[in-house]
Amino acid sequence: MAFTYLASEGEMEELGGCLRFGRRDIFIQPAQQRAIENAAGHLARETGAIFVLVITRGGQLLHARGQHDEVDLPVLSSLAAANMAAGNEIARMIDKHEAFQVLAHEGGRRSLLMCVVNEHLILLLLVPRHEPVGWVRMQMQEAARRLAGITPNLSAAGAAGRTESDDGDLAELTDQALRDLWTG
Amino acid sequence: MYINWARRELNLKIVYYGPALSGKTTNLVQIHARVLPEARSELISLATAQDRTLFFDFLELKPKKILGLTPRIQLYTVPGQPRYEASRRLVLRGADGVVFVADSELNRLKDNVLSWCNMRHQLAEQGIVWAGFPLVVQLNKRDLPSAIALEHFLRAMRMDGRFPLLEATAIEGAGVLDTLRAIVGRVVTRVQQELKETAPVR
Image (tube, rainbow over all chains, first blue to last red; front, side, top):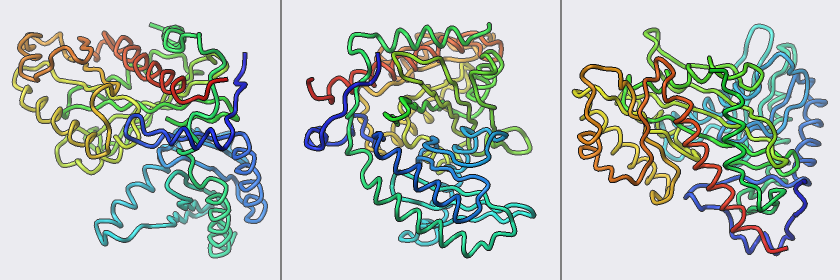
């Protein structure tokens, strides 16, 4: 069994977003995923980045490009999102209309830059220190604009896919999977 | 919740909330210690020099693929100390479910009540509809000689059985998995229900 259903755009509109829990859920469609991967790949090439991450603002990794084998990506994603969220809270305290669009951490050998794409996504880059930060920042902001165009309203896409079986008890199976992880 | 249909990933965020020193971090430490290493991330703790949570703890669980879907369950704690109100608000944002970790110590009852009210206020601020929101209460430190009686706790917290309540001694690992199973079950049931309701008829 596999996810076999993708709704048409009209059907997606009928879904009317996903605010069931009173918050914005995010749904990524295959075409959006491909476009995100292309944009991240282009950015990595242009900037000589060690890696590029596309992360939700809730800290969930959407795409990783580059040399990241030695990095715990879920942890890095959650920290990056928290860093960005904390930065924006600081900005709001200073000026309630202000928001930091770019955060940069310049290290001795590498620099890390983060940029807000839109209400859903963050872009993160790790670049060697010798890459000019101004150039990298410009490329990153350009990529962010491109990504914002690809992903204008991810919550409105709704539950446009389906689980592979409407009859399968996802909760029961997840429960079993959790028990299988437990070593005692 | 974040679903990536291209990668068949279901990402869920669960937040452990509760008063300072009630055992939120201990829950994550125990989960980290008892789960197969290949099925989890590292546990990170943004803590003060005194080992008190400053921002949050984080741990991701990666159970096996289910119905073609790869679940990724992200566990966060909030800092319990009253001064970290802003941090709690940030961590709670986007939560799919909450575990409220209460302290059984009799003289911490007021702290439990204040934290419970604080959580309700913050969820409401985020527009979360209280009714039906996946929430589980863990009454921790049941091994204490001065532990509050269950009935007394329920009455004081005005919990009329609307939320599942699990007793635990997290420091020994007791009740930790049961709590995790309870909250994940509720969140996943809600997700499946939501997908069924919103997906067009084939």
